[in-house]
Length: 194
Image (cartoon, rainbow, N blue to C red; front, side, top):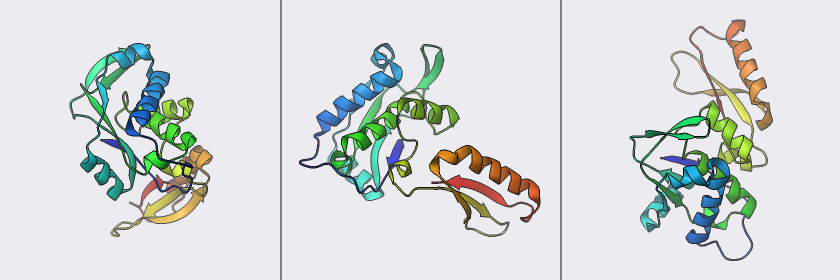
């Protein structure tokens, strides 16, 4: 399962969208990302089970793509993509209240998952190129990239420095420089989070 977490202040005015309208918009996003021909090869449908929507809501997840764990390879243009035999889009009640712009960004994120299982570099590049969000934090106005360190023998990461979301390369370079500097004990683990 892949998903987008979020807690956003911007909500739509008026009644929430219906699941069928969200799926129509998801289909449009998937066609934009992968093309009609490739999308026609996939079994993509809407999961309308209220229990799944409630579970997403409890976990703070706005949308998710459910799929079996055994992907199969298929071609899309110049790309060889490993895909699952079926996909189910799940949306939480909170996602139905998002603004059109925020919902579109999240649906693009989920559409990219039709061809990329994880959040690797290629996934991030395709998502950004298509106008989606890599994580729900990008929809929050004050979100930052946090460079975090965990000293050997400790169980918690501590935020050492923050960067703007568009400074991912600078954050990566800073962490690499700190690792070489000797300012931290040997075996210190580093990560970036949003």
